[in-house]
Length: 212
Length: 212
DNA sequence: ACTATATTGTGATGAATTTCACCAGGAACG
DNA sequence: CGTTCCTGGTGAAATTCATCACAATATAGT
Image (cartoon, rainbow over all chains, first blue to last red; front, top):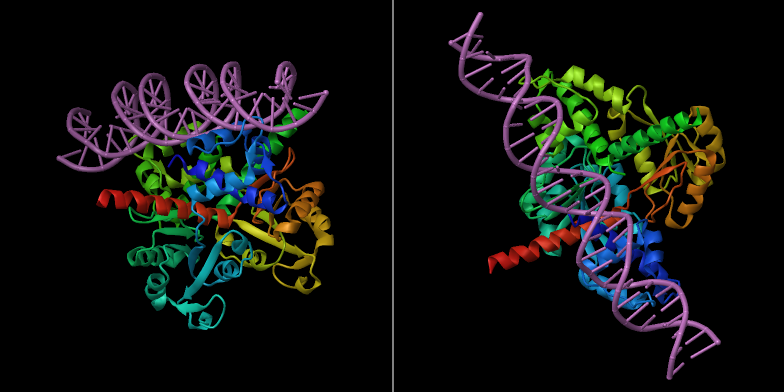
């Protein structure tokens, strides 16, 4: 997928713009956005031009206008409702994660096979896995987080796809494939750490060489 | 950075190879690896060729050989020691995350400013933030996970960089910049969800159009 | 031993994405 | 009201990245 990075950058721009708006700012330049998002100014403008987002020469962008246009494109009309399957360490942490509220993400419920974890009165409630299809349909939910152990991840994913889930954010340390009806985004934390560590050591190596 | 994806794929290959080895397999073809990692076979071979990794025509790759070569390149000589700053929901979840052990990642300690969270006898232990520099130097640690709330993230990151941390995996919902001495990898879960949701809706839209 | 064949390794090709460069145009200021 | 000059928009260039195609060749089977 090619335009994925563009969308990711636009989403980050929106988050930045909302913060700037709260700070009372009215206008913003592509430089500012670029610095906040961590890319080049030209790329921000290019991303905007792809979707026809327009500003004012010499005047930058009006934050209000830009935000409403971005919301139209990215779809911020209603909160993004999400289910979580697997209420272990990671799952429960995400259920109570504060960062979601400000970004319009709402965790509707969690699910687990362990009777110990069930608690329908919690907020968000935790139901037995058997209730997944019912809640999903009742709440019209299309996106779910998978946070089960590795050995059950593939099986759970298959069930979620069968139920009609259209997008899975997978925290299990095994890459899932998805299918034509369901997109999968894998987040492998150990992999991220190893990747980071590789480039840290790489930097140290070249640094040493330059020091010599 | 361009070769980042290549390294990421090689890391995934290594993980797959280790599983295959545990299963008792001896040889593997680029097709197999490609399917397990989720890329094309040609790309796997191309990645290998960049680093001079070689197999046998018609014979595929000997898992043992390939693993030792990959370990040489990617550096699996010793476990990857990591500190966690911020022992809230996400931080504590990561401290006890089981997926790390199998991948050679070891959480050495956690840190927090809240006296309530301190527990030097836990495994891993949780120390007050004041001890960060001491533990980092004593254990020779270069990579840390940042899992504090958004408002303190930038400040904490600065302190970590001052202390000499070379890589930060940032879970705070605000992108951090890093610097010449420190790489930063941002993981914004809300952003990932929104990104996923965008393409889910996009798929539904084109699906509807095709249905008409 | 020998052949048929499956698989690797890689140069060439092509696509996608980012950067570059620069013009147009409107805001700011006198 | 006019000038200046900064900033956006965008086509072209460059770069990066992945795919393709195929010769080389070692293996498996006979």
